[in-house]
Every structure is written in C-alpha cells, then in structure tokens.
Image (cartoon, rainbow, N blue to C red; front, side):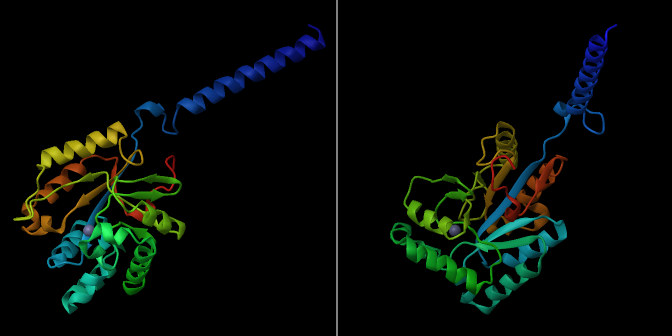
Length: 262
Ligand SMILES: [Zn+2]
C-alpha cells in the first residue's frame, strides 16, 4: 500500500470513529436512555392578585405547611388600609415560599380606561407601589389587563394599556399576564371550573405548547379559594394531582425565562 493510500485509510478510520462516537453521544444521555424518552420539565407559576386581603393569613400558613411556591401581586393601597392588612404583607415577606410582586398602588381605582390613558401616571403608580412595599423585583401585573412584556416578546389583550406597558418595559419592568385563569364565583368563592377541568386544561396547554412560553404556564387564581378549610379546598386537590407529575415544578416568576428558548 502506498503512503498516500495508507494516509487515506487512516483518515477514513478517524472519520468513521468520530462519526460513530458523535452519534452515540448525541443520541444517548449519560444514563444511557434515548433523549426522546427523557421527561421534559414543565414549570407552573401560581399567581394570586389583589392582596393583601382579609383571609390572606390562611394563604400564608397553608403555603408554608405545603412548601408550595406561589407568586402574589400586591396592591399597596390595600396594605395601607388597616394595620392588619399591613401585617399580612410582612407575613408574606417572611415566608420563603411566597414572592411579592407589583400590581400597582391604586389598582387603577378600577377605572381602567382612564388609568391607561395616561402612561406616565401608570409608571408613577407602579413606582410608588414598589417603594412603599420595598418590592425587590421589577415584576408587574397590570390591573385589569392580561398583557405581557418579557424580553423582546409582547402580547396585548386588545384593550387599552399597550402604551403604558411599553413605557414600563422601557423602564426595566417585566410584565406578566396569565395563560389560564381558574375563575371563581364571587358570591361564595367556589371555583367555576371543576378540579378535573382545570387539571386537564393545564396538562393540555403544557403538552400543546400553547402558553406564552412553551413548557411554562402562568395560572391566575383567587384568594377566595382559601375560604374553606385547606384540606377541603379544590385548590389542594389540584396541587396534589399536579404533584403526581414528576416533571412539573412550581416556581417563582423571577425564574421565568426571558427568552422563548431558555
Ligand atoms: Zn387585580
């Protein structure tokens, strides 16, 4: 065999070796299972708006006992109303499973069109709330609006507030809407969707990838769901069922990915 042919044979052998090595590396995980059967992690962000409210103390003790990560979007005006509500705010601050974020100081006084007609007032209201409640993160849910501003991605709910959301994003705020709401009956606090229904909606959305960010779902819930004894609540039933999925993780919104592909 000529030197040229010998060299060619060596290169061919190296090529085959690298190809086989890379194939085995790409297709197998360190544990030897093919990637396709690996379980994709799915993140669930439970969020509660408008606190602190009467009854917030139930949430605090339940969350601590359950060791369940939740997110609360707080309204500063409520915390200022009574000393008791102010104490609830302090309670959240000391609970490592609860993270407090910004839902504005006034909650737009529930006059949304007027509130959003003046974006700089919206910014001032959010900043006032941040200072009053000593909020650590620039994470906002706009009152009365399901709008998103995360990194370069955005979504509006079709009503006024777009310019205000843009101004907040320009000032470094991340704005979170929600992918799914577990609605409740305002009269007695009972949930509109059954536990079965809401569980199926969550699982379907996570599997279909129809959330704002794939594999991440933000759920809007209401404090009223804590009115009953915890063991009897629909929320506990839901949490217990979701916890049966090994790949579902309850998380705080500050860990929500900025990028669709994080
Ligand atoms: Zn609200």
